[in-house]
Length: 285
Image (cartoon, rainbow, N blue to C red; front, top):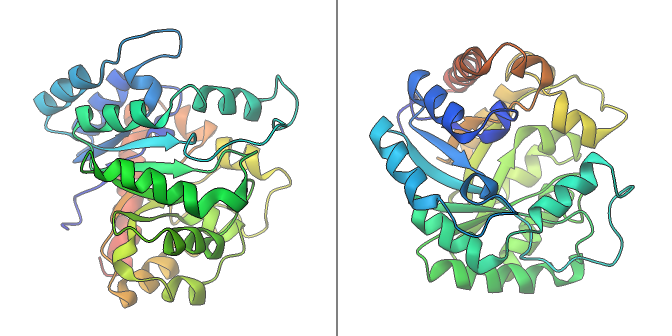
């Protein structure tokens, strides 16, 4: 993949809608961007706009490569996260508005190649491998890949557990997304990373942070990340390990940051692209 090929992950421009993110992706030189299910259909609406979004993106020369996130592949437990009014609980309710068949239909209409599966914070981890295998089988019917993302505050908290789920599930269209922030904050290791087949790492999300874990990981992941290469998470070291493995995933910034967003959508997307290209170049990509 040429170094210029970057995915603009929606979280980098979290406060902004699809139209603004598409304009920024095109103007800042991204070749692809991720799309959220609510970009296609808000929960209170009944009709998906996915096909229309695809046409708009094609007019700007930007691929809609990933639909993210998808949580209803794993059955939730009875209790919800935190209080009913917490930010985490509100997101959980939003994510739960989209069932598997609708998710895969949306992704196909967008022209996406990949869907990101995230464990709901109250998901039943004992069912994860079987449910992931079933979701992969359904995704395959749409010609889609399904990539599992681990997060330290979910029932699939680290790389080791995520790879257990994917490898036990089996289908070749199942793989992993490596978010370098979650990788470091989950205590996952480069040794564990090196043991994973390179072709099962589908995408890599780039950001950074301080060396010491923040007191509230959910809040830090949702509001306080830094541009790749500007913190102490050794993003370049992770990328060098990926290169040594022979991994050739798709890369892009997911810098979920209130301070970055405050710069304005275009400036945030330009800075995220420049920082991502810089660490990728340093790692030899």
